[in-house]
Image 1 (cartoon, rainbow, N blue to C red):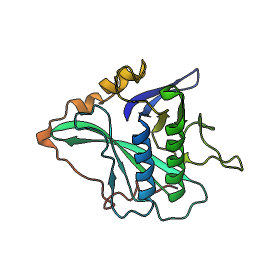
Image 2 (cartoon, rainbow, N blue to C red):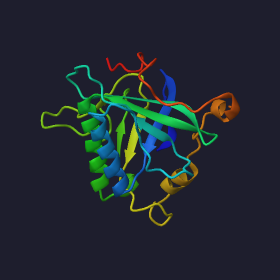
Image 3 (cartoon, helix red, strand yellow):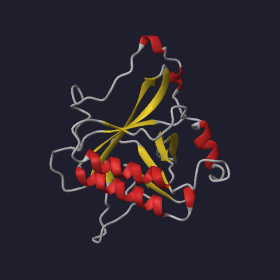
Image 4 (cartoon, helix red, strand yellow):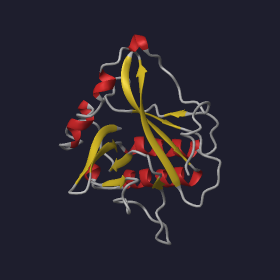
Length: 212
């Protein structure tokens, strides 16, 4: 997961926000989809651990699925900073109901099966009326939607591998470097000795653990 920025600028508004680009090979997308399905009945946080220890990308956790009833398939995606092995990282936090997790898993499976590589993408943005590449069911309804306050998610098509020969530019440069927006300046200045590594817990997360 690579932290990028999307910017909206016109005569009426200027706005920028985090846009997470998700890269993976066939095994990685299959594993991510499987973790999303596990989160539907999970009782504890799921850490996505397929990334190597020397990654420059974002960390990711999936929270157990919401239990409240909603007609729509919903996801809330946020980010925060954490320290791992004394180094700062940005972390993606994924929360949603069961249908939201199934919908995101379906998009991951479609990304896994595409023949176009990272040039293909599915862009989920809570501010877009119709997210680019969103999958719809037989009734034309979006399989999954992001609730307001979420960051955007840009799922790229499956990569053949992780070498420069297997990921064409400009995608390889982003994957190998972590991108220009890997860490906010305020996080770069943090002193690990003044902070601690911490996990996501339902305690104290009442505001976050709400999809409506």
